[in-house]
Figure 1 (cartoon, rainbow, N blue to C red):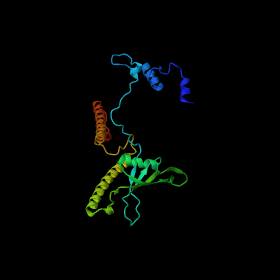
Figure 2 (tube, helix red, strand yellow; figure 1 turned 90 degrees about the horizontal axis):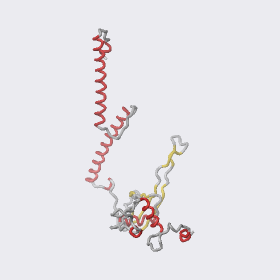
Figure 3 (cartoon, rainbow, N blue to C red; figure 1 turned 45 degrees about the vertical axis):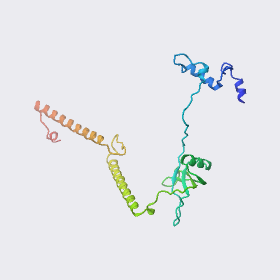
Figure 4 (tube, rainbow, N blue to C red; figure 1 turned 135 degrees about the vertical axis):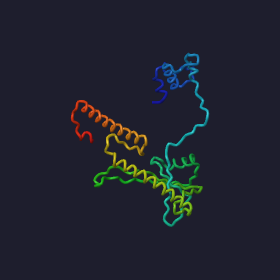
Length: 250
């Protein structure tokens, strides 16, 4: 059914007047907002049909941001061969095609490309320990190998660094590894000592305020128990009853 046939079946009061510049959708939007009381002028009166047809003017340039993610990866270089700087490798979503990759790199990063090759990596199924049934699949991705007009050098490996840069990199890795080891030991200590307690929840780090609250709570419980025992002993002494030594020692 064409648009004219559909409009011919619409009731006349729904269509805009012949002398109006509004389209049928704009006239329907005007009637809906007028019925809801959303069209009011500065003096409190309703907008007329001519005033309601005025369009908003947007000042500035419209910017369209991408909603996909390209992850750069190191090129596959066979052993003993030099790194190719005129080639780049990306991991892209599976829905991206070659015709999408070229304008994306050109518009977002200003990268000029010569050729594009894509390949889908189908991850194997992850099975149970006995291998009877599949549980889930590892992450599947698409690899895009792009030829570049201008060379791009990926950050160097430790084998390609000089002595100074390699020493700084090793010191940073050692410091980062020691910090990660300390965090892991702390996590394991808390997990093995308190994981079975009621209401325990590990938040990723030990908070000082939570530790002080637990310490104050235990001190208050101990003080209340001591006050209860003292009150019981004082009551028995008032009526001259025998006080058990076990109660006093406890």
